[in-house]
Amino acid sequence: MRKRHNQYRTHRDASHQASANVRLLEAALSLKDRLFSLLALRRGLRRLRRWVLIMLIILPLLAGIFWGGKTAVEKAYSLSIDKITFDARQKLISKEQALRMLGIENSINMAALDTTAMKKKLEENPCIESALIRAELPDTLHIEINERIPVVYVEQESGTDTGNRIRFFMDPNGKLFPVIPEYHRNFMGAPVWYLHPGDVARFSSGEIISEERRRPIVELVAAANHYSLVEIPAIREIFRPKEWKIIITLENGAEVLMQVYDIKGQMERLAMILEHCRATHRRPRSINVVPKINPTVIYADGGK
Image 1 (tube, rainbow, N blue to C red):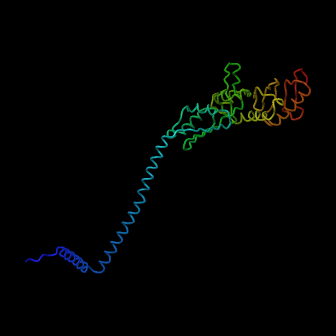
Image 2 (spheres, rainbow, N blue to C red):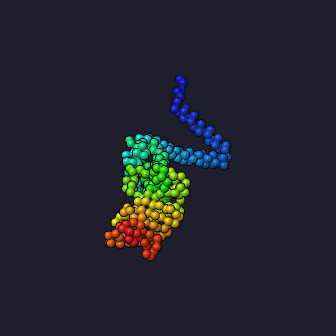
Image 3 (cartoon, rainbow, N blue to C red):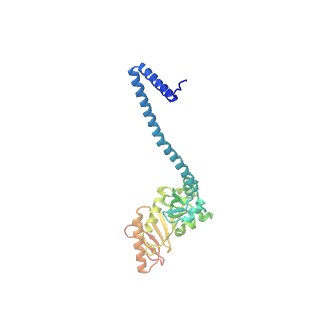
């Protein structure tokens, strides 16, 4: 009878044989080769483990940045301006008027907002000196403007003869700009300065009167504003017939002769003269405040 082999034993013998062969191959290698091969394997495993850890950290981070950016963009495109703050430095132009200039009537999308173009549009209005537009997430728009302050009306002196009575306002920097009652209702009683042909290069909005020509006029109006209308009645007309000479007409009809220097001192003398006129119940017709001592007054009744 044939003996039956144990199959499990046969497999174990084969495994032992394979292990023995591996040991023989390893034994054939030098100690140096075996050592470096083992070290290289360990280094490779460590390097692989490190890159796996780095990728496990970076990939979720990149995914978070991508989805966060995508969400932010989508959210921005869905945001609308719900709040508009407005500040006019001189309080001449209202929020509603500024929004009309910008063409803002309905809601604005934050992503479609062009603050540079809006700033330019406001500053194209000659009544506005400067503007600042700023958007603030998530839903706020800030608008700030600085309007031009009217000092005097300006009109060509020849207009009384030609019938061309066009008027502009002049700001403290000599800039001419249109008269718009909607904005300038508190300045409609400003005095009129009648210009000579050489006072401005071209009589039109946007032109600038030189500092030399405008300085005494600006000082005159500023000095008059320090007095009440009882002390010095409103100035109605301003002429400058000569380089050194200014003639003003007051609300009460009095004509006042001044010079372009020491405007403040001359206004002080004018205030004292008018106070004396009120105290003596006399109406002045012509006043010369140029002399510091004994300025002259001609009264409506002919006396001095």
